[in-house]
Length: 182
Image 1: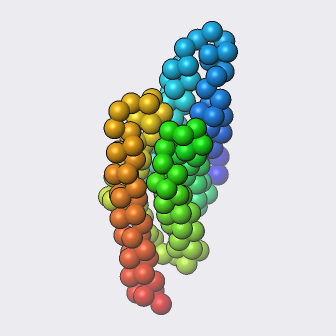
Image 2: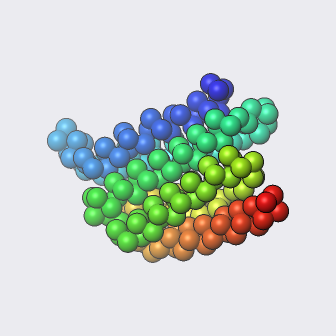
């Protein structure tokens, strides 16, 4: 249970609330006499570090044959907590559309539930290429929004479209696998 991939996933669970707090309290740096942009840098750095652990935990788990049931549940949960902490913080701070975030949250919760059901039924509904592209699009949008760069809102809506599309792929994949099993 406490192998390196699972510990990396756990680190994302710990980073997410710290990043969320920084997004919601950007004045911590300006109160210390620094420019407020340092809060953007700090939140972005935490997000990048956590995102890199997402790549490495999967890579290490596959390469060292350390894939566990705990990891199969913990990894997507940590991913969701990280992205949702970023998206909710950005929405609450006024940097992201509430509708876009609502659509993403609903999809993520639904698919997380579906993945849990799949595991309990012994059905493998692994991440599709669309799911991986969706994750990258969300991460890029979060990065742009955290840094208050231009085009962040447009990238967010592209991520929303990919999020909905990949969610539909999961549902279709689960339905087909369930029929075969059933």
